[in-house]
Image (cartoon, rainbow, N blue to C red; front, side):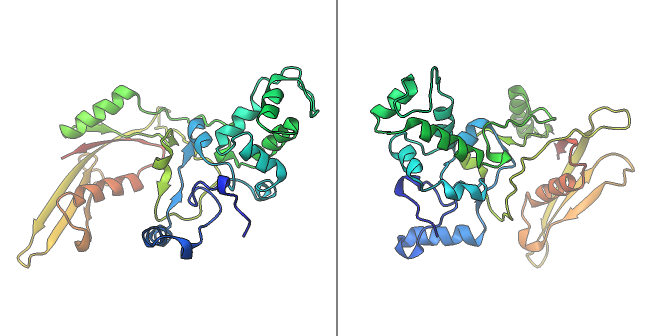
Length: 285
């Protein structure tokens, strides 16, 4: 495996390196094995520019194999040691500076190059060009220069507040169609992951027969009881309307039965069996 400089190490879950488990404390070794067992990964559907820039640039999990040629070069060492480049945002800040009267010379008189030389960099223009090459290694989903414009609008702040109140009062909830993660980056971790995709998720709007955005209001019921043998039995129901063939009772496996699991199973079933682009409104019993 390639050498990973100390300053390049941020997190094995965000980068393409793994720690030597025999050198880890017992508690960290157990934690790391558990994460591997349940396939923990950073796997957000799509990321905002701010989140992309918070991720480590070296050994980036979302980069092409070309990044391997840049992780440990002389310029890479200079970028880490003299320019303080650790995150993706550090790279974008470096290349977006105001390079007025810049030239590809070691003694370039532009202000950014003067500043870099004062920090110990012998050839600022080479580090700037290396930074661009490194950023170009990032795949579309992870590149902060490529913004995602979702078709479905996210919920407005007042709509989110109404959802909190509606949940407490058992009223209609407005489904949040947002796929872009705005932060913090810790929200991007998932378990039971398969291979992550480097293509950002794209939202589409489902249209009804009249060409209008499709909305669904779904009523959700819950049932839970303990039989004479002491076994917990749970189920949930979804109801779209009188005589609707989509109305359904969803039974919960006995080992997962609880007071609220029927409702959870019913909502999950409704989501899985509705058009992916539809706006869903759940009314809880």
